[in-house]
Length: 265
Image (cartoon, rainbow, N blue to C red; front, side, top):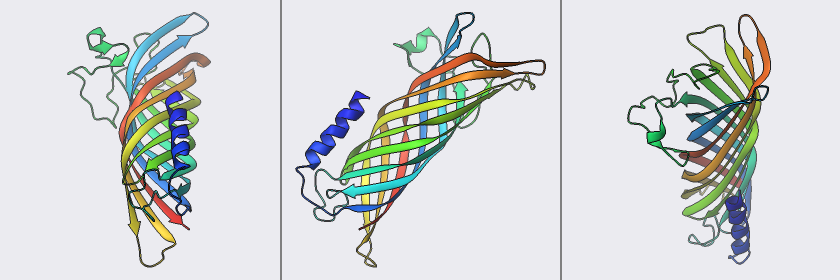
């Protein structure tokens, strides 16, 4: 979070000394495919039980839509090589994910709690790999996640740019077990993602109307943090346990994204 705040401060500081340019407002649309190497922490407060497990969350897709303001030459309207073009946007975020268990990971493949993949782990990222989560109190071998919340982003640059992004909101998680059809473990909790990314920005200009601009971006996530918290309900054919256990996650995202902004003077 300190990295994000520092970047925001530097962007506004340098943009104050940049060449004045046109200010454009409009809407932005973002499509992403993002994966999170994730550490799971499963707790049962009544017994003091605690277990750590590792997984990968694959989001396919992550869609964002909102309002954007582009200023200080980010579109190259006055100077195509202006140093501090700024694009700020805020809106809504929706993500659909599959979480896969990494049960083949052991101490030989771990380094300071960061996952190093075992050669034996092979699965299609957007499909369940049918490996059961956890060794005790197993919620199942298939997990889906749906996120809905807000999105904030701030990009600085022209043809090449660096940006910061923050997503947060409510999240629904659901575990099922292909071997125990009558069991479901689910919860509605919260999620938060913060990251830094870099990419290229391609302004498109049309002769039809000089007041209308399109800006297309492609970027990659290179540094970030993500977290989730759920109070899990365990439902089976003979009983229902409300808020039986708490699942907390933290991880680091990596992925690719595409952004399209429609802007008006």
